[in-house]
Image (cartoon, rainbow, N blue to C red; front, side):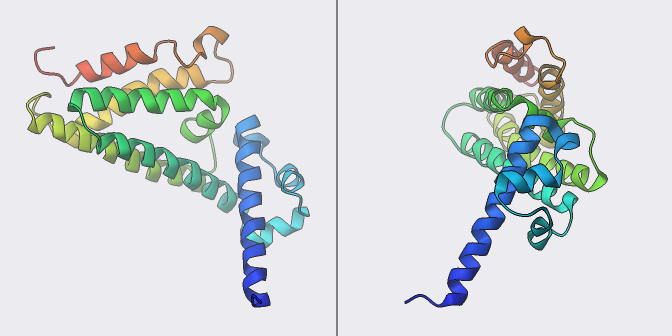
Length: 203
């Protein structure tokens, strides 16, 4: 027979995860401004006050939503960075994967990347942006070492690439973006090609 304390801890953890997933879904529907504790609690099936038993503040809850989603994106990029193929192809694949995944959850991605938010959330956003750029840096460094890319600081090159495709992406993620611009396939391949050519020798 399992100890009651273990069962209780598992129950608490499941409730905490349910609240976290509910918060992610609410942000995905309306961004940070629409993500209030009451609808999150209702979706998670708990009392509004109970949310604060698991998260010390609304900002803490939202920061952990950011952590959860961003860590998944870093994992996808790491798998590409560590994969086979030329650095040029891996860089294009990484850009395409990031953009396509963002466009499939457009409102959530806009909140995580560009929507105005509390300083605590923004600090978390900058932290995860650095983690994402780190994976791009690994690919860029491989390209420099292999002679595929121009000889520049790899971190600077990765930051320039990330900034370029994010700028193109944000315009498509914005809530008021035209419908034709929202399609995942529209412009993604061209953006990846342009950003990759920024670093390619003999471009």
